[in-house]
Length: 278
Image (cartoon, rainbow, N blue to C red; front, side, top):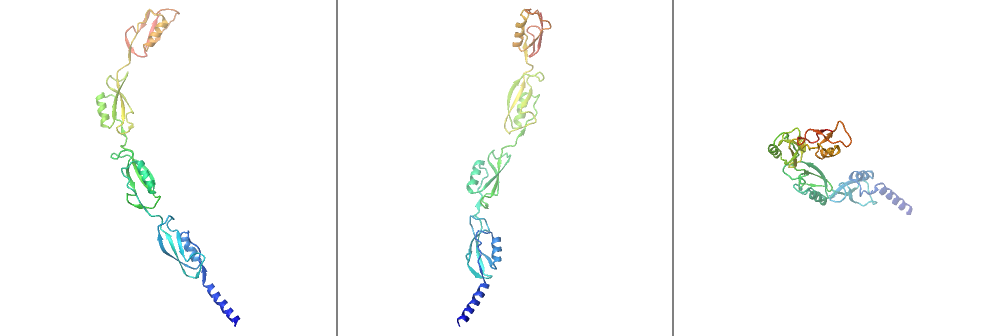
C-alpha cells in the first residue's frame, strides 16, 4: 500500500513538472528582449500598464509573477513598461536675448541648437524663431532649434570717388551708412572731391556703420627755401627739413651754393628735387 501511494505521488509530481516552468526575470529589459525570454520559457507576455518613469520608453519596470517562481506552461506574465519621462512643454523663446533663451532651455531640461540669421526687425542677439513651437510637449533632452538675429544684413558701400563731399555724404546716408569727412593731399583728384572711402567701394559694411570719406586737398605743395650762399651741408639740411631732396652734380668740400633750381620761394610738390650748383 505504501509503495502504491509513493508511485502515485511520483506520477503526480512528474505530471506537474511537465506542465510547470520557472518565470524568467525581465525587469530592466526592453519589451522586445523581454518577450523573447518569456516566449522561450513557454509563457505568454502581456503589457498591463505603461507609466511615466526616468527609464527610457519600453523598458520593463515590474513583472507579475515575480522572477524565479513556478507557473504552468502558457501562463501569462504581466509586465509594466516605462512610457519614458514626462514630456516637457517648450518655453516661448522668441524675442528673448540669446543668453536668456539658453538658460531657459537648460532649466527646462532641453538642449539648445543655435543658428543665426540676419533680420531687419529683430535686434541683434535676440531670438527670431524657434522649432518646436512654444507650448509643444517633447521628451526631456530633446533639441530645440533657436534662430538668433545678427541684426540687419550688411550693406554695399556705394561708389562715391570723384563726388563732392555733399553728394558722397548723401549717397552713403541713403545706403544706411554713417559717413565721416577726412582730408588728404592728392596729385590726381581735384580739391574738394572724394579721393577714396574706407571700407572700400563695393565692399560690404555693417548696417549703420561708420565710413571714412577722404576729400582731396589737392597736391601737397611746399615753398622752396633760399639756400644760395649756404654751405652745401647746410643747404642739404634746409631742403630736407622743407620736405625736399637735393641734387649736386659736382661737390667741393666746404663749397657754398651759388645757384638752385627751382628757385627760392617757388611752390613745388613735397619730395621734389632741387638741383644745386657750387
